[in-house]
Length: 310
Image (cartoon, rainbow, N blue to C red; front, top):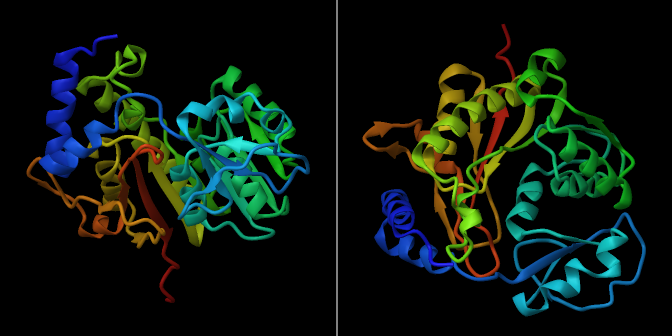
């Protein structure tokens, strides 16, 4: 399939505005053809794996095989039984940044298909409680079956719109994961039209409005001193820094924490976009740059400051 030159040209021009010419060209070169396949070894299920990948530096319990061997993972008995879970390392480090602890109460606000929920449950050794929220019925039922197959027992499932959750639960959760629905720009493959046929500036604007409502809901559900991870697989600042900036302007108790990951190929968050100044704390956010394995990813770590003593 020959990519649409108008769409591709517009995308690359925007990407250069976001990350600079040289970095944009490097990213552009990764956006064709199959990528290497990573998988995570699930400690909640015993079983034989049957293949041996290379450890992924910077993503705990994660291994990789070449793209040519992808089906060895995705069609394996180990994957069917939940012994391994195909997942990108960028998603693994998002859960590492959330740092869930034994016995906590955690909210996964846009949880399907459930990969991050699984990693959270494993980090908590199936203790405490996870509330996994997904509004689309088909995705909800697949997620629930997926996590049952993978040995998750500490999760309650809610088929609900995440935008309304925060006002219902109050400041209940010690950790909140919001892997927000996005334009999925980092998953575009210019050899596969279906991956970019819906991409356009209007779609980015529509998506960002939903993301703003979701991040406000996520923050409303967060305890003082708690941790909120906001992440997307989009490059657009409208879906990333501008969404977090929207929250910071509305919530005086919100703060941005530094993100520390064991990967050098990252960029600091933007503090200016298209002439508009954003909150300077956004430089603590990170963009993970893609290669033949890692997906491009935006990752921001937020907290609710404890109220000052009166």
